[in-house]
Image 1: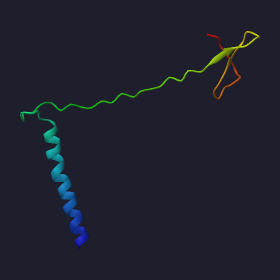
Image 2 (image 1 turned 45 degrees about the horizontal axis):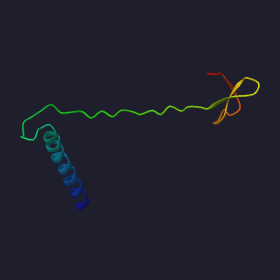
Image 3 (image 1 turned 180 degrees about the vertical axis):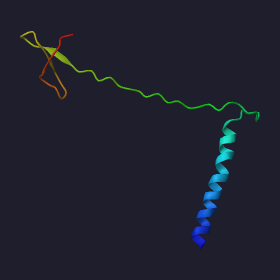
Image 4 (image 1 turned 30 degrees about the vertical axis):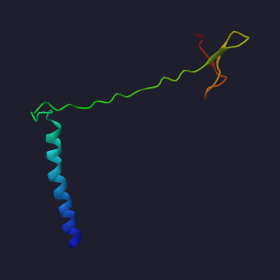
Length: 75
């Protein structure tokens, strides 16, 4: 019984606090309503460069990585 009562109180508190937090985020310093800003995060991608080495025979090969020693196009 007490467990159900505490769970209901926690849910009611969460639901009551959520709209007030959302309303506060859409106001400026003077308390006027402004359009809410959306936060956009950019994904950063790192380009992996593979090292190629030109051998004595004039053919290019990967110098490191999982394809080490395999032939590739010369830049």
